[in-house]
Image 1 (cartoon, one colour):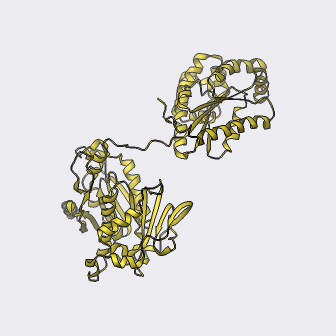
Image 2 (cartoon, rainbow, N blue to C red):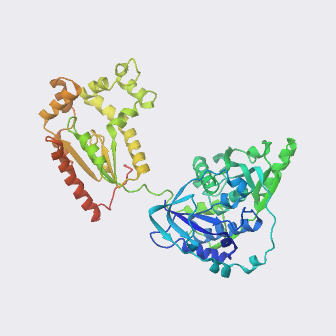
Image 3 (tube, rainbow, N blue to C red):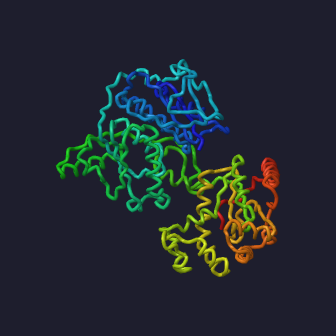
Length: 528
């Protein structure tokens, strides 16, 4: 995700809504620099800073105009530095790496942000002089305000589905009022069945993750207690330490109901603080409704998802399958490829062994299929040699093993590739073709040596007889059958530098193919 930072004077909040929208549009250019997440860092105009009604109203304008300008831009107004210094001293800075930076008057970037070497930096978004010219006349006439009431323990609640501007305003209001611990009731799925387009509501695990990430990003100084709730009240009516509740004006009745329940339990009432969630002009009519005033809501966000990509496809990585028979030198070539820039090599043979460690479901399944004789009596682990003796001597037993192990291995491979997002992923697997993975790959690279040489290598490596080594080789796919499916073949019969030269040649030509665009039509990482 490309992260942007807008660092500007707090007077920015005094701009008219239209001026704020204009500045936000400068930070979301239709170029390759456009960020997907934008942190707005406001330099406090007082020392120590003060939390006031006008401060929150300005933050409301930022979120509302960001929603109007681009609902897909994840704007986050940093709050910790806007609170009194006594609360800010305890913050352990969470460093955010920025790809795009916009700042006024060439001001030094706050230490919570670091800039990537390749980042796009715009040194002049708006000068202080321009700010004073753009400030809303009504805001210039505003009388000085008293500080907001703050509390050690604050509570809020909600669904927090597809976190949007309305949620961010609720969270921001509560965070600005909170000194120590913010309790958040998160509605469980079972209570949401009557919601509009309920089937599109995010799983509670995802809502919890996004909620916690947002809160800790805008103010890492607080403790966030996110509690799943299966009734309308949750911890708000049982926690004696709570002091205040924050709600939107449309949910005021719910906040008052909390205090009625607390009264029944002889708990002190909570101070109730509300704020308006304004309608925003949304210029978009492709969701089957008229454009115009639109309430910021999760149901609007869910409706907007219809016909759109729900989850971004996994990055299209160029996939190479590296395979070869036992004793072919495949693993050494895999290690050599792993040193190439932008390459992730996954050793599936090692993963397969991890997949049936003691305590795994697969461990028990293998014992059911092949008997207790494959179990090491001391460790309780699967004895690989004992298992190998069975599967190498029986095609049926080998097929069972492949059917049980390799789907789990492929799932693991895909998760590691998605996590690392390399340019090229090499799946190193002896039984890659037998497992049926060939059609899911961009290329297949095969390593081979003549049978006699492979026999000698196996005998020396595994300390087994020639008869057993030859039987093991012949239980596998032949060199000829592998090469018939290969895009590239390597022979490792000679010294390492000779083999490395073959690999370097293949790598250079691959880079040339990719740079010419022939590698752009990449296959999905998810096989049928």
